[in-house]
Image (cartoon, rainbow, N blue to C red; front, side, top):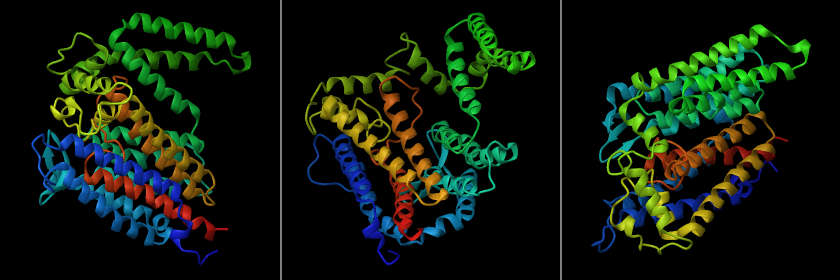
Length: 417
């Protein structure tokens, strides 16, 4: 068993799903970036560059699979440290694009380290949580786990890149899976709901609902577990949060962040200004109907109505040219990939591999869900790429490394009996 090659033990179902998504992604990038008067193939355009990026994933995959599986666990702290140094270096050597200093300029190409730091972060997180002595009911262990996630989160938020930073928050799902008390998750969920509710509902009504719910909970709770002081503290905290929302919205959020929230909830926004991108993306997706207009036949796509369509808005091309059925197929492929990763993670022989697998699924799911949800007005536009689909070498290579490290760990499990 130990002499079997990595290739023989590789999960080829996952590899096939990965390859299918990459190829379908390139087809949509080709369609969205091909000029109407184009003749021949141009490697200087987005579709040409993306083809180069795709070809370079082959040696990248070879390197990832050639490295000993134990390397990723043994040197996780070193890799994490290098990732943090790359993020810190942006504040000195980084290139500013559209107000964000999150790129290194390398000749004609750019590199976005935040994409790769997702992998190094979950490697160290998996290493820390796999220690038999770690118990996430312990406050000290919770602080360390949050610090591992929080350091890159803060550095990316300072770039400022709220979209990429938000992805790290989703790792709380992994912590919850590994024993973090449920109240952390519920607190985050209710904070999210209260924040957006407070933007459009008078605080007095929200506080009244909170008070009624707490009274109901208090009466339903067994007398032995009632603690009036705890209920009072929770109510004061919730009230303070609700009453501070307006201040945060007016004085902390940037104008473009306010616009993105307003576009989502306010039907009176100017569709030729701050509402333009979302409106055009919904028009493109809706115009595809059931079966789409056909490959290279999208009028919204060819007319260039959707800005940055080959990057964060690439799914609009799927909706317009491949229709509702095409969208279902693409979504179905992502769902299959996620379930396959979760299935493989559950059957890992080491805790490190299992936690890393769940982290990979969490990162991919968050990107997939947020990217598509923001295009159909279910989530604020924050600018995150669709894994394996959106244009960009950094995102494609980072997601490839993220996935194939897990496949390497999975292929190695036959040697861990």
